[in-house]
Length: 349
Image (cartoon, rainbow, N blue to C red; front, top):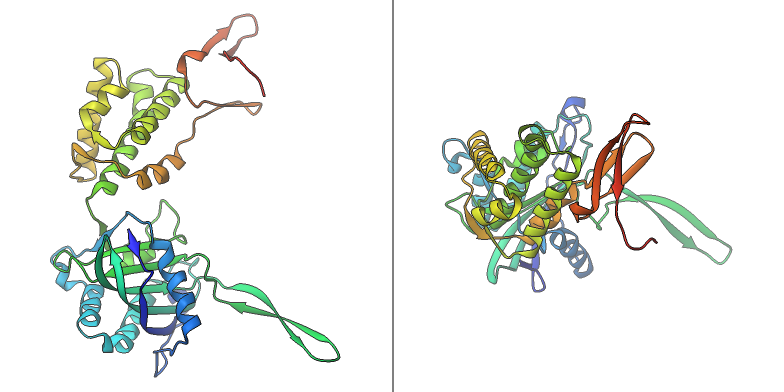
């Protein structure tokens, strides 16, 4: 949990980074530091820090050989040891970011670095470096009035309501690669992120959020992709398993893999198949998943958004199933030559 109620923004730099594929270049002014008045500082503090206020997903900088060889790690280390270097190091970061901006969807925009003091992370005081790239600007109206009339102008400005590309690096866990959190809503879900994977080059911290997230994905992959073929489950069975999997994570504070396996799968054959799939999953992704941990409800809320408890019937009907597998039956009508679902209920709205 991040508390920024007493935080101060002591340094703030700006540069401009374009799209490398379009040869737009980088603009680094001779003076990158921007003087801020109190209201501007207040707006930036809220815009930059509020999106990270409740995050539980953290990362470390990662390098295949040693994290001390990581360029962003080196730059952050320099700034944390001497905040007066913010201006020079911000220019280096802009040049590094430009090398990663080759995807056609990446738009040129301002690149900001903020140095924050008096943050509280999990109850401990910490300084932090914030990085923020502007992908798109918002239009707003400005009026100018005189005795004779009003004039209306349309201006473009930097949105402060929601970050699309940002990172917050905390001056803690230096030996492991600095604890940080990151946002990238520009890159698509199934593609490599120019921000997280290429520029920041980070790896997730193997904590409760990490374990919760991967067990939800593991269970979902088994239920929707493996179980229907290996165990002969139909769509209603898989939806029922998905719903009961969600209930387990939502209703329990602690995860235990054997308790989860037996709660979800009643037959020994199903339990053995899930255990085998878990071993395959951990080997394939090289994941050191824990057998027991505290469930992260933030990870539960985020991950279960992707599971759809819907039975789609041709183009005519959608059945939304939220539970009670015993109240829905599947069959085949010989006379009509079509499959059917029978649903039992008490009231209609």
